Image 1 (cartoon, helix red, strand yellow):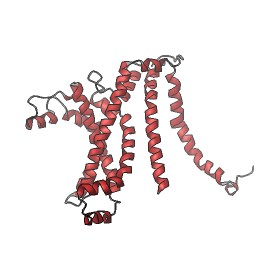
Image 2 (image 1 turned 120 degrees about the vertical axis):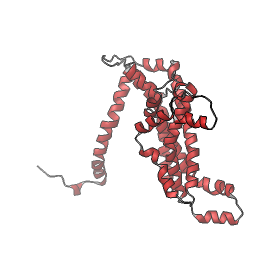
Image 3 (image 1 turned 180 degrees about the vertical axis):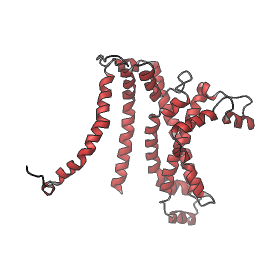
Image 4 (image 1 turned 90 degrees about the horizontal axis):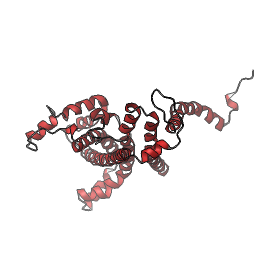
Length: 297
């Protein structure tokens, strides 16, 4: 048997040889499950039953289902509001932590605490905070005189939506803060000194120097955070279960309840596939933005 000599491989053959394990991995853990899920979406597969091909019936029924349209609208509203507020708080934290003050390193370390906690532990803590009996949220609001009786945070439709927003913002704002702070560290101080000599105030320096310098990071962080927020499931499910009265039933929760509670696997997968185009567009935008920035540098 002749031995293959590596020296005889061309550059392209060597590149393909190195990439083969990656392609196999992606095919097994990504491509195969996706194709399997798409196949199931064209069937009436249920837990314990045999799948029967039904074509586009699942998709047609979902697009005509007010509950699905409600969950889609709820997900888009939840994502838009959450990302916008996370961007605001992340920018504020980054601007503050970019200044020299006593205890700055401790404050920077505290910024990543929401990421260090396991999600289930964090959500259980928030359930206690929003508890209508003995919850710290009601205690603080009553102490400052904002309310005179306990609010049922997780039992009221509007308050439950606010609650899941608060949890998502609390967990996601540090991502914006750290990303923007890292970019702020790269802005030369000479620019601010020159602007100060020209008589520019704090606000003018922010809009003329700071904002243009960090705009690319803000856009990229917003795109990435939008992808994560659209895929949100665990926090909402553990906090409210999609209730009350489907007030917090985002796409991930609705898909899970359809597949696992109602036992309709085929339709549950169809829900996720219908939401996929939004994610694909965001992923393409984020990838294109990152590659365009790398090419320009």
